[in-house]
Image (cartoon, rainbow, N blue to C red; front, side, top):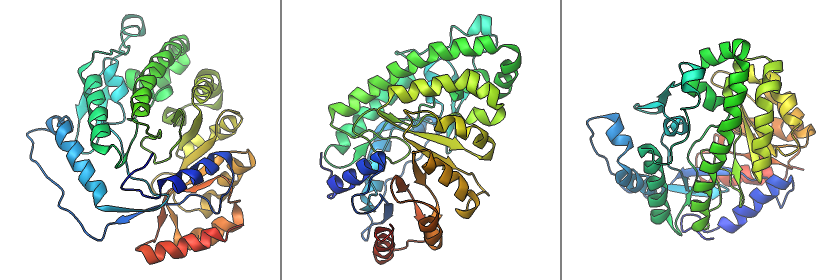
Length: 357
């Protein structure tokens, strides 16, 4: 596959393949995206509501394509777009009311009572927002053919799916009072998700796309990001009994996976996640106010010692020396390095990373 916005895609793909295998071709993959020297005007349009703006698929496709043209994709930076319908769109397809805001969208819990509502909150292949997301994906693929990469939408299955269907506070209570209902709903929700995943996966593969999503990491096979942000609210015992089996099931379903570990309150579950043999990598997100490589150095080292690849996000240029001293280059992906302002700075950083042994 070739993309006009990324002429050296084959070389970038090879470095990402090495990342998954915890190998090195010449250096770890480094995503660097800078503004293009020549900027084209990006179209704008006024709307009467946020919902109208989100659902104007034709305009969004044109706008996204133009925004990509205004960027310069260096090293392993990739021209990726994905049909963003908000992080809880899967819940809408399962019966939740869905609200579009200025910058994001969210669902309204639809399981008030497990006995009455639990079996009703299921995937509807004829749901208007599911059909709209399919349409969005198809139009991006048609627009981007041989130009840019199109990824999967944001699904967030598993525990986060149930937290949205039920509401996180009530689900936390259910972990004490209605744990059997939680387990039963989890068990039925995964086949629904795998069915949804296959629909979009097959569509992307029809266009020979690598598989990616809201994190700009690619794989030629089934790839996604298992996660459970809800796990920050529960004990290790609850997590391992109720949710860990589903995460293992997800990892077994994918060819490649990187776990999205979000926030310090979720760190207590890391050891259990690292024991999943089918899990390939970890995306550790400390959260706002918690950034800094040195602060989490031991977390990254633990991930590497467990034989998993890892994503380094929001690393600063002046933290590179600390990274080189603490970690091995095999299985590291720099998804963002702050402090690179131009192509000259990018070359200097890449030279430094290339010398990391």
